[in-house]
Image (cartoon, rainbow, N blue to C red; front, side, top):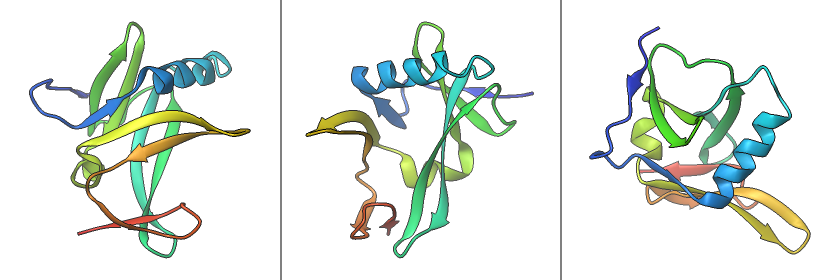
Amino acid sequence: MAVEAFDPTQSTVSVTPAAIEHFRRQLDQKPDAQAVRLSVKESGCTGFMYVVDLVDQAKDSDLRHPLAEGLDLFIDRDSLKVVTGTEIDFVTEGVNRQLKFLNPNAQDHCGCGESFSVN
């Protein structure tokens, strides 16, 4: 496996402390998973949706982004042009808790919030 390491001089994705703690809790519940993987896929009415997976290892083309001690985020290289500059946060709004993706590349979002488009 040839996972490329994250270059801190290149701004790809940032992750808030709240999202890091959320990822840690999720990984604690899935002992066979070692990291979080971020990608996008074509979906929904506006074009793309985020895919966050708990994985045991990276794919060959993933970029490795260390988040904290013992916690890595793997970013799908094919998704980089869509996710570069995105901040991932974990927010509580009323009784709802969810990951939020603050993506400067997103131009439009569908009404239900599942998908987005980019230029």
